[in-house]
Length: 116
Image 1 (cartoon, rainbow, N blue to C red):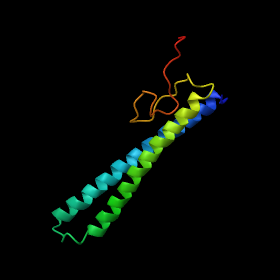
Image 2 (cartoon, rainbow, N blue to C red; image 1 turned 45 degrees about the vertical axis):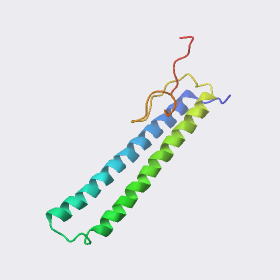
Image 3 (cartoon, rainbow, N blue to C red; image 1 turned 120 degrees about the horizontal axis):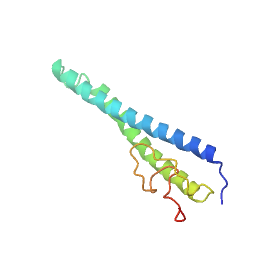
Image 4 (cartoon, helix red, strand yellow; image 1 turned 60 degrees about the horizontal axis):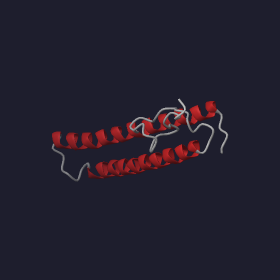
């Protein structure tokens, strides 16, 4: 069994929550930028090729961020697995935004002890 200080577990949980929120915000921002490029190109009656490279680069960045989000989900599951093998297995630190509070994809969160 791993012995993790509760305060340290809380720091990891908070940092993970902030990281997930930052990635989610970046995904939203890039998705909006893709839409803005198309909207401005259309409103300005630019030839389709004029903004295509900018749109393609922004789209590629969005795809990379979506992959990063999947990696954050994997990291969250790994951290949860570590917690379950520790003295903090019954400690709830909450979930990053967008993650269900089921314990499957939730950082450092498990259901309450059956003794409670």
